[in-house]
Length: 186
Image 1 (cartoon, rainbow, N blue to C red):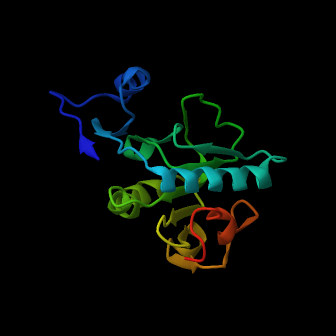
Image 2 (tube, rainbow, N blue to C red):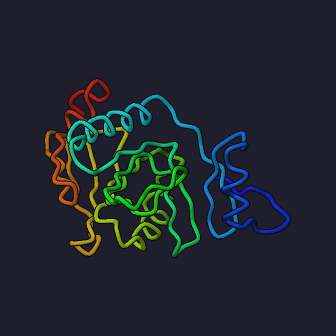
């Protein structure tokens, strides 16, 4: 991501007002704007498949699944960003342009986003009292890392044919389903 050059920091209100007309999506961090890197076929397909698998399992309950065009707001860090996939189950989370109470966040790793997803976003997301699980999803092999509040945010790695148990959502996803048609046996 690259910082947007501005003469002065932008307020959150100015960001929200300018974002719909922006040529490219931008994330907001304490007054600074960061251009979002474009996605390619594989991470986009993984995110879409993950969202579809989650939606199929959660459709009868209060949880809602969102993909790349919905922002998450972290007031404690004065931040708005676009996760690849996230789930909110809070009925108060009704703002149409962003959500503030994600229960689970998923980031599909790429060479341009991995460092940010592993450090900055994980640290910021941990400030959300609603967040129970933060999941990093590899695009190069069947591999995910799950960080859980209940486990003091210590990562658990899953790979191959293992099952991703999302304790906060009461959902299980087979990695083979998440990567179906994308990575065969990797």
